[in-house]
Length: 190
Image (cartoon, rainbow, N blue to C red; front, top):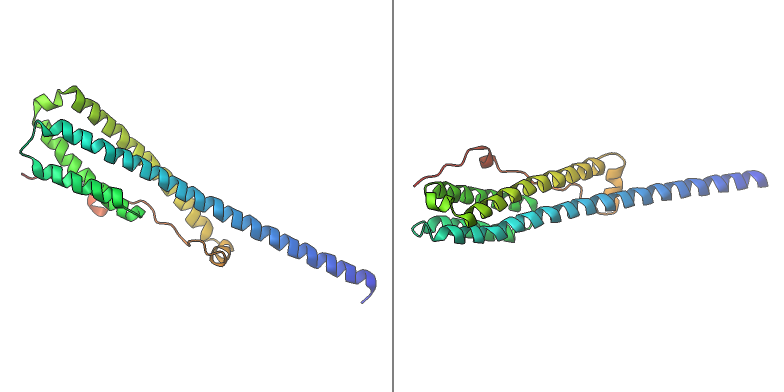
């Protein structure tokens, strides 16, 4: 091999190594950014779920004076709120959120039977706050699920899946899904 050809081979090999290193760095940084976006969006979901959980005791206190005999509903709400606060994964949070939604639906149904409560300014304000919070939850769940979709699609595509495995990134994140029971209208029984 002539001296000039050796330099060409060396420069070509260095260029290939540099190009591969650049691709790896790009893929790694992309996976870090997508993974952080999923975590950030989950934190937003947790924030609005916490806001909801914080509003619930105020709503319960506003209703308690009118419905002292409905202790079971208050217990259900308290239990569901504790589960929501202790949820560690999107699926646990979804289950706890559905439980709290059912308990709140029952509470609001009971409130409908108490005209003096419905007329209470405190109750109306809390009900409006809760409705606004429900909308925020829906928006943040959607944003979280979009971030998860982008992450999962990217990680599971070729050749990114090899980089994800190499750098030990999660191969998928779970979506925040409503449970099957959420598709049914809530039933209130007395």
